[in-house]
Structure formats: structure tokens, C-alpha cells
Image (cartoon, rainbow, N blue to C red):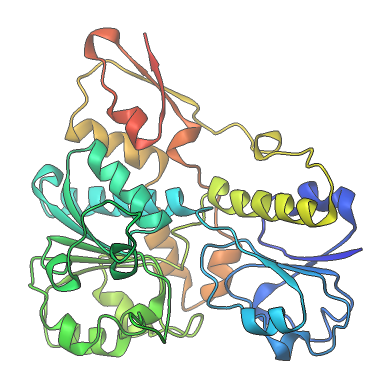
Length: 375
């Protein structure tokens, strides 16, 4: 069995080595000839899987994307050829939520804001929005959820607000899939008209899909002097992005919000288990078999947990300013895809054990995702 996989899928060789012959590829430049002999195709979001890519392949049995989003997959075409398809819902949701939290911590410090006094509008309450909501709950940060699709489901008992209400919050964080059709399309969800409604005190964070915001309209607004604070991890027309917009961002990165080692590797593990199920093979590997020890694995805290300590703890594990600096320094020289391909290892909060003095015991670090040890 020939298994072709994106070279940026961590531990793919380790997970799939026993299941067939492995071939790694560059996801952005994959051609029909490249995958003509694949029985299994494993991709990430930069690879468009459609008839054009698969026209020379006659034996493909399984396609998997190690991502939450599936807008790069022509599922109707795969179904027409009876090719089994799997995605990895939720695999990097924690990673994206921690990216947003790091951005909020950095901007709060930069602009002398109190996190506890901010309101957050989470637009999109699926896996990623839900994980962010959990972390904000842990910090008692007031927030609202906007998700018209989930709001229509009787099984979801959460309270939802309208998009207009969500967009009035101090921080607006976008976590929707990219859709162009249906009752609630998200393409250019924030167009020129909606962008014009933002105040100059607000923060807008996009860590889902670039096309959810009209980037040209956003640039025009910023060039006119609007002081809206921007955190952009995703961009229209990646990798050929609107680079003039970078200068107007508080934080700008190369679509890496979900790029924690755990986040990417969970996607690999999910696809491994799905392929094992299709082959009727019992999985005998798990992610913990391959994750390395973090550089810092334990932190001892002898101080009451407060906003200052939160700032230090979050930035110790992941300081988004590092990725912003790399992006600004390398985008014009190395390019968007090179930054992603050479992304330095980043761990999630769960890799760190927080040792708390019993007298100062707090469940907040554990609720945020850190491993807790109370001494």
C-alpha cells in the first residue's frame, strides 16, 4: 500500500510505517502525477484535493486531512469515486485557543488593559470556539458565543447572541469555517460595511480562515487611520497575501495558530486511527509514544495566582510575539510557506506541570490546561 503524506505532518512516519510504503511531499506544490500511485493520501489545509489533483490516480482508497477545516477538500468528488474521507475535527482547537489567549495577554500588557474587565465575542462556537470559551471561563472573563448554525440545534443548550451583538465586544475572535453557500456563508463575513462598525478601542482576532475578512476593505480602513487593533494569523490568498496589511497589525503570523506540536500531531493520530479502522487493524500506537519532553516541564509557584502571574505563565509557554517577529523579518525574504515549514517547536500548556503551594491553591492553571500539582 502506497501512503503519501504531507511532510509537515509530525510523526507521520512513526504512525504509518507499519501500514505501507511511505512518501512525503510538499503540500503546496503537489501535482496529479505526484500522487498517481497513491493508495492513501494524507494532506493539510494548503493542498486542494479535487478532480484536478486525482485525475491520474485510479486506485486511491483513503483521503485524510490532518486539519479541522475541510474547505480544501472536494468531498462530493471523493464520494463519487467511493473514496473514504476523514478529517481531524478538534485536533488543533486547544492550540488556536492558546494562541488567542497569548495574543490577549500581550495586547493587554501593551495597552495597559485589564483582562478581567474585557468582554470577548467568540464568533464560531465549534471545537475551537468552545476551547477558547473554557479558558475564558477559567479566568472569569466575560464572553458571548455567536454561532447561528449551533443556535438552531436543540441539542446545544448554550446561550448564543447575534453576530451584531458579538461584534460590539472589546475583543472579537473569529473561529468559523470558510463557507461560500448555505444559510450562513462566512466568506467576507466581515465586509467593508461590518468593519466600519468597529470602534477604535476594539481588538479583532482572526485565527480561522483569511477569507472570512475582506482584507482589501480592512487595509483601506486602516490606511484611513482607523485604530482598530488587529491580530491576524490567516490571510486572503495565502501564500500571496496582502503584505501592506502587516504594518497595521498588532500581531501578524503565518497561519500557525494551530501549529503546536500537540495540535499538529493529534491530526496525524486521528488519521492513523481512521485508516486502521478502514483496514480492520487494531491501532497499537498513540501520540504519547512520540511526544518529546518539553524544555521546561515543571513550574513551582509560590505566589497567589493573579493576572501578573497569568501573563508570566502564558508567555513562558507560548509568547506570540516570537512568531510575530519571525513573520515580519522573513515574509519578504523567505516567504509565507517557508515560515510555516520551518516553524519552531511550540508546546501546549498541557506539557507543563504547575506546582502550587497548598496554601495558595488555585484550580485556574488546571482549568487553563496546565497539569496541576498541589504541594
